[in-house]
Length: 627
Ligand code: ADP
Ligand code: MG
Image 1: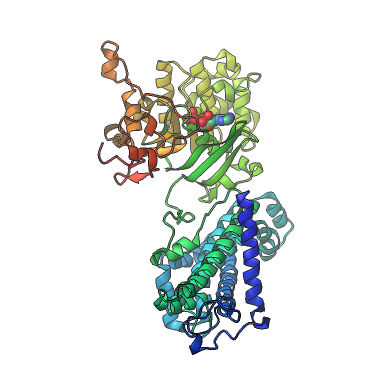
Image 2: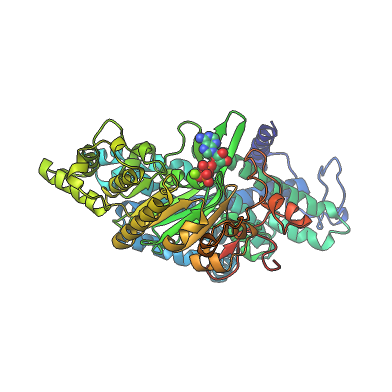
């Protein structure tokens, strides 16, 4: 309800301001630059409904004409930036290779400049004025357009209708303009309104500093500048332009939000230029989200702020909430935490295997680097195109192998199916390939096993077959969700060895999900600890084991049986008191506080952020230094 009220208000307000700006010269307004020294700082009257400023000029009229300057600069700048940025983004993403270098690299250089510095530079070179402001805006925001466009085009460029257009022999310019552009227009439009809002703020900021609109032309920034020295004698003079500014920016942002929901429910503020712009002015938002990924840094899987929601009859839950984690090629990352902490949901989100209809990625990105070096945001790949990834680039191994094996087909049939799904093969080659896959996962007498059905195999053998099937597409990434949990202890160790061996030999990135920290020591390079849908600690395996910072990690470690304990008489393991809270009723502040021995009153209030405790280790505890 409130949502709609604010949206209606925003739309009405913005319409009024735009009409006022457009119609200002035609309205029966007083001349905005006409001074009236006798009426200096006079309060509202019939002739001057909003009062008069420090030179006796009519405030209402200056607000209206000021809107022309502010909106004019913002719109011109946003349009210029869009033209340049969208073109560069389209060309870079469509042609890639040298085109990407030529279009995107120079923009990276611009982005690396502090925006205020760039603005000052432009003003110095071109002199202050409305045109300069528009150019500055275009310069500052072209890169964000380019990046948004670039990312969007990457996700659509391989779609079938684009292949079809190519097959018809259309020229790239035509494909770009007619086929691709309309498909990426939504996010660009959202970007456009963000830039307009940022432009209004920039105009007033620079005009306030004396670097923007040249007096006596009215602008909101100049009005603030003029009224500031007299703010005690005439506070209204300052309040009017500020109110106009704040309400306009608020209205644009509100409409922007609504547009984003409409066009692209998944993409949240991927790029928020306003906060970046204000970084040097001290007005910025405190918690800006990082921009779209910078240059590729060798990461195979880069999950950023991923949130996944599940609709349940009792309400929507955030099964995972802002999870970020990275996997490099050949690296094994263990994802640990008690049952219900969101480990499986993280894996299933990456694989687009969320529960149908009820599960959806609500926010965040999943950048994946394919073999051909192309990066794709898997969170935004349409389901029908995901086949390119699942089973080929990446595979999943589940806790219960029976779940992924079809009981009515022989092991050989299923392996051959997996092998031939990715390319043509003769029957003979396929059979040989299947046999070699079984050898690779350490199954004795493979020739005989190929003719058997899954139920004829032991649990450990079945899991080996499931791993063999996962390997058929020659994946770069394997997500193994509790692959040893259903097996007995000795078999567990064997499967663990096998996974480790395969992962190391083939240089596969492995996400190893388990609730048991004990099993990760030998397989993992890094450990990511999850609790209630969030990452609460992460670091290299040695640091997590020898220098855990979060009380929850310590609790998990304390519940791992040590070899020396197992050899001696049975010692009772300590375990973490209490249970994982329901995702429908998460505690305020730190989600672990109700179960934590170290919790203070501050923990119940403060929402902890993931903090760096060393170069490689992060923890989400406000008291990590003390405990
Ligand atoms: P883990 O793998 O650590 O055991 P999950 O990812 O399975 O955790 O679960 C995370 C949260 O999502 C839990 O609160 C769980 O109750 C909820 N959840 C998982 N699957 C479903 C589902 N199909 N429907 C509703 N809630 C679910
Ligand atoms: Mg699970």
